[in-house]
Length: 139
Image 1 (cartoon, rainbow, N blue to C red):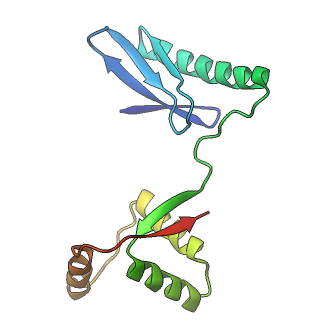
Image 2 (image 1 turned 135 degrees about the vertical axis):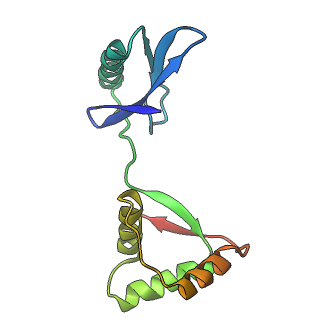
């Protein structure tokens, strides 16, 4: 799926062969905003018009337009991993939030780690057990 971008908003770009149109929707907000067009070039313009219309409509209604992804989400992890991460963060004098930010940054930037084979076996075996899940709040 291709992603369209405009004014801090992202939207999908899909081909609907049954209807012979390009279509999409704005991502990462609760309000449903869709758009469609006859061609990919027109779809970008319709996406931008839909975002502008959404912002204008919110202004008219006297409410703030939703911003995609506020930077907060809940993460469910095994309690033992939560404890280990909190202890490591404490030992390294960083916040647990910093640990999660660093891990996500490595993930989205496809950073690979050179992990010795023995350590990898330990990681794989501990990841394959069925944990009781806890919740860590990331802000």
